[in-house]
Every structure is written in structure tokens, then in C-alpha cells.
Amino acid sequence: MKQKIETISEQLLKIVEQKLHNADVGHDIWHIRRVLSNAMYIQSIEGGNGSVVILSAVLHDLVDEKYFDVSQAVTEVRSLLRQFNISSEDIESVLKIITNMSFSKEIDGITQSSPEFNIVKDADRLDAIGAIGIARAFSYGNQHRRPFFDPESFPVDHLSSASYRSSKSPTINHFFEKLLQIPSKMMTHTGREMALEREGFMTDYLQHFFDEWRVWDETSAHAWNDLLQRSFKNR
Ligand code: ADP
Ligand code: NI
Image (cartoon, rainbow, N blue to C red; front, side, top):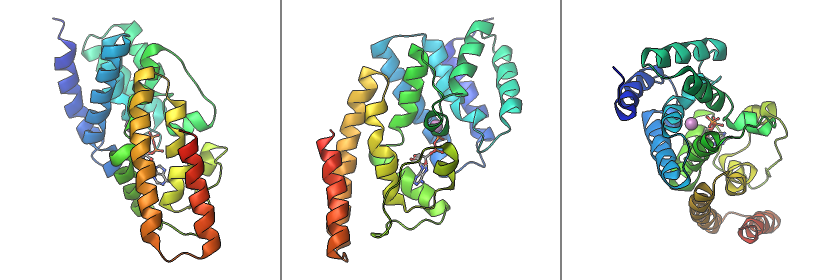
């Protein structure tokens, strides 16, 4: 008997929770549920294959090279979806989406485009910005033993995924190196609107952070405030 997609999604969430139990707090089951909720919202406005969107959102972190052997993970996800009687066509669409949507793939210029890919990638990116994004960034920074901020260490352009992954820069730099660039890279109209609102909150947050820092020398205070003003203008 064919089950409804909502029932399948609930069952898959339980499996995903178990598989991600060793992942960091930024990739726990709440991240997956938020991405699913963002994705369903965007899909409800922009259209696209709802089942492929739901399955991709739920499964998107199961093929992450940070936690899993990718080719083994792909085989496992394929057989899992077969057990739920998902059509081969939908299974291959889901796999194509989830193996191509990471930040690192984007830096390396690996792109995809389908309405469903755009929706799920936007949904994942939304969770990296705004209030939740700030929490995830500092949590990541703490896990990698990065300082919050160092006024003498300025943001850089990461031109490859290797440089992005091996970066030792303080967490505030990540806002300039990555997070404030997310809204302009959103693929759907709805996702972009949501991203712009979250961006406004992040730039306000950074302004407060710099105001409260107080222990500046004048040159670096100028430089950081200039950087921030430029991102206000880019809005
Ligand atoms: P994904 O799992 O979507 O490919 P990442 O593993 O790159 O993404 O990032 C997961 C979360 O950790 C995101 O919220 C991201 O902003 C944050 N993060 C990644 N790199 C850094 C960093 N250098 N400093 C602070 N936060 C980071
Ligand atoms: Ni994710």
C-alpha cells in the first residue's frame, strides 16, 4: 500500500535523528525540521514536486561528507526510499538534490538547477542566517575553538572549499565571508524575501556587537565599521 508523504516523512525523521546523533548541534534533528518547514513553506508558494521537496529536505544531511562516506550514504538513502515505495524517478531527483547542495559544493562552483533543488537549498541556507544562523555560527566557532572576534584579523575570500574548511578565522569573520552573501545567492523569490529580513537582523546584530566591543584601536574600528556600512549599502 502506498503511504502518504507526510507519514513517510515522519518515519524518515526518526531514522535521520538516529543517523545524525553524532553530528554537531547545528546539524541536529531540529535543523532538519526547520529546513523541512522552510522548504514546505517556499514550495507552497512557488510550486514544484512536493514529495521530492519534502524527502530532500528530510534527507539532505545524510550524504554530508563531514559525517558519512558519500557513496555508501547514497546507496543507503536509495534503498531506504525504495522501502517506502518512492518511484525511481523521484529517488534519483532527491539524490541529485542532496548530493549537490552543500556550501562547499557551491564555493567550488558545482551547481544544479531545478525548482525543487532551488527550494531545498534556499531552505537550508535560511537556517544559516538570522537569529538561528547566529547561534549556529557561534556554536560552530566554539566547536572549532575559534575566538568570537579579533579586530586585527580581517575577512578573506574563500576561493575553494578546502580554504573554507581549513579557515581558522574568528566567528565574526564568517558573517562577512559567507553569511551576509547568502541573500544575493538565493534561488527563489520567496527564499530571497525571507533571507533579506534575516540579513537585516544580522547586520543590526553586528552593529551592536561592534558598539559593545569598546576596546578598539581607532584604525581597526574604522575598518570594521566600513565593512559593515558596505553590507548595509548592498542591501
Ligand atoms: P552545510 O552543512 O550546509 O554544508 P556548513 O557545514 O558549512 O554547511 O555549515 C553549517 C553551519 O555552520 C552553518 O550555519 C554555517 O554558517 C556554520 N559555519 C560553517 N563554517 C563556519 C565558520 N567558519 N565560522 C562560523 N560558523 C560556520
Ligand atoms: Ni543542512
